[in-house]
Image 1 (cartoon, rainbow, N blue to C red):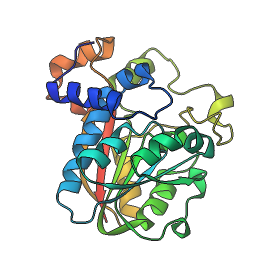
Image 2: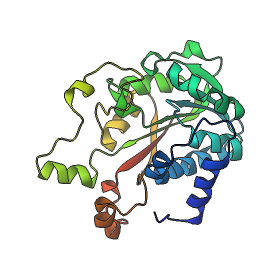
Image 3: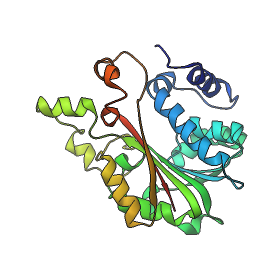
Length: 251
């Protein structure tokens, strides 16, 4: 795997070495998502750098690669929410980084769970997994933001080049219906219920009083996949065909 920069290499090294308590590191997951993880870290750490208070909430935290780096290098005070099974499996790692942990079904979030608002709320790779409209999800997340706080939603780009190719070949874009329409659960957490284009996320922001600031289009990784090879020569003029988007809004 050819990495894009020494910064990403350093980020990967940090993700692999910044804990003595993580049960294990999924190297394949880290490499398959490395570029988008680093870009998310880059975007969010820049937002936090302008703040005096750095209260951060991450929804569906999972392996917490970005959150650990924000805590370590951006001096963020991090709270995390995930299924009880995820919190229990990673509790020592989360506590090592002084995360405040909340076990909850993400579809049942409430302001009553927390004793303060947040300067930054992250929903990374979440909206595509939930059988709820983005506006419903953003309504809850926006209610957790402090005035002028930032909401960052990262999610696969439904208009990415690979999906365009699938449509041309009459191939399905989503997983089998039995999983797509299944219940929200830890066992079914990896299912993509629906993927979105930028305008749908922006519309969800605007319906809930969150101003769209910027969208960053990026990659999952830098591996030599067919999609990466085909689109990279046109990278600067076709950013909307990149596979990932990080949508930033401000309350």
